[in-house]
Image 1: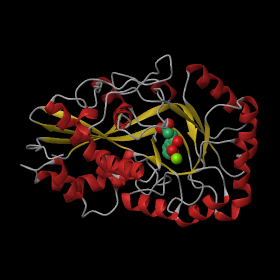
Image 2: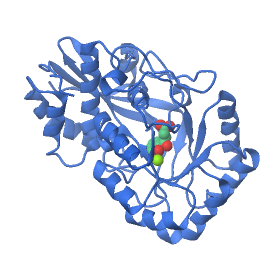
Image 3: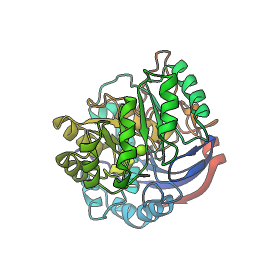
Image 4: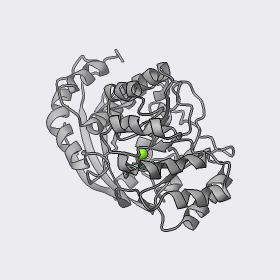
Length: 373
Ligand code: OSB
Ligand code: MG
């Protein structure tokens, strides 16, 4: 991205809190609301939007919306203030001095890319070098009290033609639950996500997943582990997909060289943005590692970034991209994500991310606001 950004006129932060249609439970938390930090950057009267994928609590990653606010306000925005004739790449390079905090950095990068695409009058996927194509869909089902509840959700998803089903598992809510699903749905593309609930001592239990013909098991071991996943992958047939453990290109290189996984869940927020995601996808392609785009229960803004990302070559597995109505009754954007009759999702075609924020809803769901420039 060599294009100059121009003088930044305004940077605003909103935190919105949206009720979830149903609580979302993982091995680490049960969420009833989505709290999202949104960033709006205005330049020559054009505004770009970004969404930070952090949560209020540091259970998925150490970042929270509060730490993201701190990093954006006290470190990233001061660097943005210096921008007069810099390109997006130069700005992102200046961010490298700040260690970690990928989610905060990604939110700023998101807004700059949306802004740049709008300035050029092109959709974001075109700016990224992606192709206009419909993308595949997939749902992520939270942990439920019993298998019957999961079966009911899968029934509806199959009717809607979702391309794959992911179910969350944790110790004690795993093998029997998957067995019950496979009994009813012997053929559906199915995978599980453990969000780091197991340790290498659980090897014997993890081997039991092998009989269910799963597409993959996502992040079985520690959130920052790479080595023990390589030990596990040698013992189980089910392909391992890493999520939490991959926060940079270097992590991916280590994991691939060690044989810790054959699939990577690329969440653009977790790895620090769309551009690094593109590099990561290319690196994985070069090393025969499959990738797909994960999700973080994003509002329509973050969801749009995930959609555009998946137009890049290499995103050939269905990800965690599902319809807005599975999460929110009212989103803050004008175009909810909906499935076509064959289960595919059409990319918004306007300039930038291709969707607009509904001001009235932003105001109604806003729980915090600050003007940083
Ligand atoms: O591990 O992929 C995950 C949601 C929040 C935090 C972590 C994860 C998830 C999901 C949901 O699985 C994905 C989505 O539907 O947005
Ligand atoms: Mg995951």
